Image 1 (cartoon, one colour):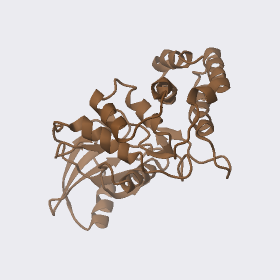
Image 2 (tube, one colour):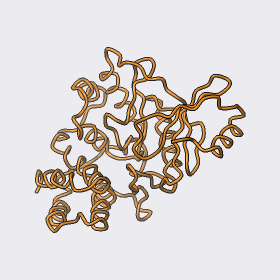
Image 3 (cartoon, one colour):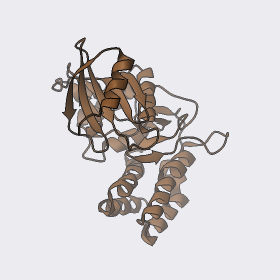
Length: 290
């Protein structure tokens, strides 16, 4: 896709430099991506989509900026953003360092030590192209169990109803989950951790020094097990990642039992985004508990 002249002129005016080269990049499933080179030799990364969901790029920028506050793990510097684009530093990709996943696990554990008083975030954002609800329903502090079940599982169930995927089997299963959710998630006495929100193998890159850089977040403050559960959805990371994470920031007993409840949110989201191929996986995760 050719980048239109209006966006080029806008960027040049804001950056106060001419764009000398535009290279389309592959890999984006929602937006077009480009590597831009300026006349001062600086390289930038642009995502552009004139039909993007309202505030998708704005909330992505806010999420990257929030992750950067933890000073634990690299994220791209946010240069500029608006309704239909986000401009970031361009990160040259390298090869994984020898201890890549060990260092990744420790850095991720450190990021999770950056906490907030409340679950959620100051704005709703996006998980893929679907809305992710983050704002509490009232001014009272929500428990993690209430937040997760209502704003993650039930919200996705509402989407399945709108899209025609909500069979009686699915609704009955989630109803049974609701009856048992306190027992499934258990007591949480941890402070809400800063979460990437959508971490899998496609949402990190290896930088020029062989270290990890997180991209495409769906940031909020929640239980860190939710982040780790997502990492295991599509095959997981290496064992070193989890071992070194747990050494740096030990997990509570029973976290392996709770993994599937956190996978369920993302599988329901994939069902709503990509269709019925994820239906049986969602049912299987529900049946693990009820």
